[in-house]
Amino acid sequence: MKKYLCTFYLPDLLEDDFWAIIPSHRQHINDLMREEVIITYSVNGLRTKGWVVLNAESEMEAAEMIDKFPIRKYIQYELDELFIFDTMIGAPKLVMN
Image (cartoon, rainbow, N blue to C red; front, top):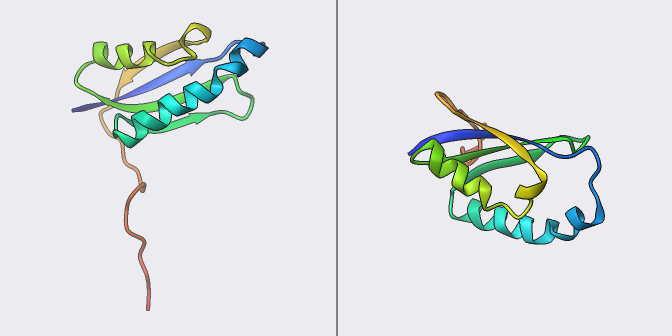
């Protein structure tokens, strides 16, 4: 399984119809995170850009996942296959007694 970084770009003006679908979008993202398809999901403070790291067999499969996002019609995105992705997520904490 490969890892892909999706960088997505939000429109300058986020209108009411965009905000109305956020609850269903968050549920979709949470479901994919529970399934370990999505590893990380983040949006910058200006709400102009976001990043998703996901597991997929191919770039086409990764794109198909992004295309199913409820917010898809509002975003442009690019995908990059990752060579290295290190994280402390899930790593045990070191306890010094």
